[in-house]
Length: 209
Image: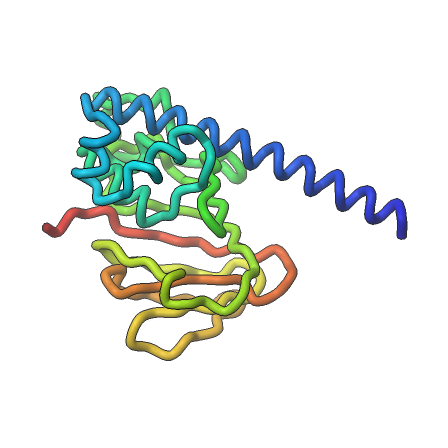
């Protein structure tokens, strides 16, 4: 039992180190993209609607951004979301087909989720495909829900999740279950069990405004 506790502590320590690395990497990339867009922190906050302090903390690797904030920031910088996930992305790329081999997606750590971004080499996509590891947490509150333009679909690969969508009763989805919803409705997702919970998640990335 003691050895098991030591092993678990080691795993937690390794993950904490990796999480800080992912935050720092994403923050550095987001700062570079903002500067390339010739925006100050104040300008970025004004255009995106994300608090200046939040953008500053993200860029310095102090917090993990929510998906909603990633969407807002990318749109404010007038770029596809893939630019936030890859520092060597070719902005002049014209290919319309790409493949991601298993386990080779770009890993991004966000609040309560770990995203593996797939097919990141394709520029200006209308759909963002993700394999997402979902954290177990307490019952979702109104302040935990997010909304943004677009539509989403998710397919449960392992574990069980609770999907909460504004105006609808919460739904429990198990392995093999699928849901599709309007992203403009406030929504949230959480794992229900203390097991690895993963979903395939596809979100449209089209500015309808």
